[in-house]
Amino acid sequence: MATLEIRYRYVIAAFSRYFNAAWAQNGFRAKTSIKDKPKDFSLSHEQQMIYHYGDNLLKEFGRDYWLDCAEHRTFPTAMYKRVAEDGFVGIMVPESDGGAGLGMLEMVLL
Image 1 (cartoon, rainbow, N blue to C red):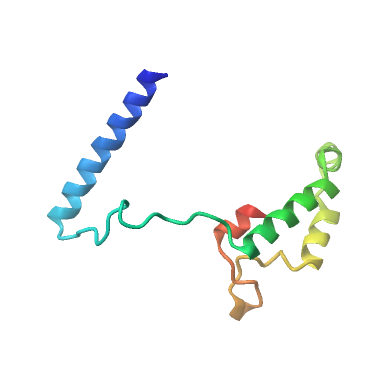
Image 2: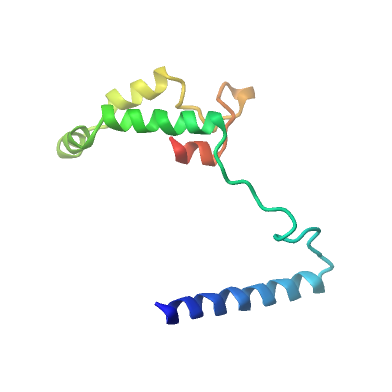
């Protein structure tokens, strides 16, 4: 395990040196350091609601449903209709085009 961790650190350090040199050569400079301001990766309330919706959807359309669809080689119409009724089909479509205007993270959470 220690050997893998050492290799991982070596690879990260090598990439870091390479990209920092390349950026400096092209005139790019990082404005802030990671140490200056830590990123907040917590989910917003809306994202948590989308995640819980997907969890409830999975409970409703569980493994047996998906096995039945796979066995009969059918599209999961009932699940798709449910998602469409709840307004999640156009989750990544811009609002100007009638969608929700959300991003890839929300799509993954669903």
